[in-house]
Length: 76
Image (cartoon, rainbow, N blue to C red):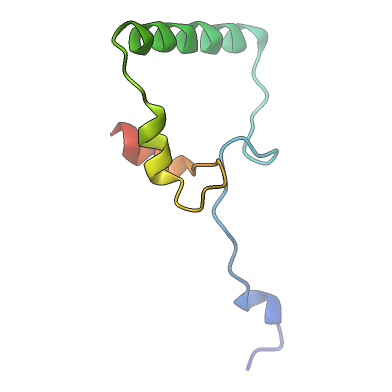
């Protein structure tokens, strides 16, 4: 047995939207992001496509969060 029990603790992967995973964006980056999200919203709304069903498939614990790794798998 090791004298360091913390080495046996499993750490959950980081979730998007948590304080540790959020990077501070410049005003220009934030405006670009809002513009991009607006375009995505318009595209899917006009075609009557519900992308939430895809995210619900990855939210196996029904806690309303999806890991960054899961998002990458969703869009790749």
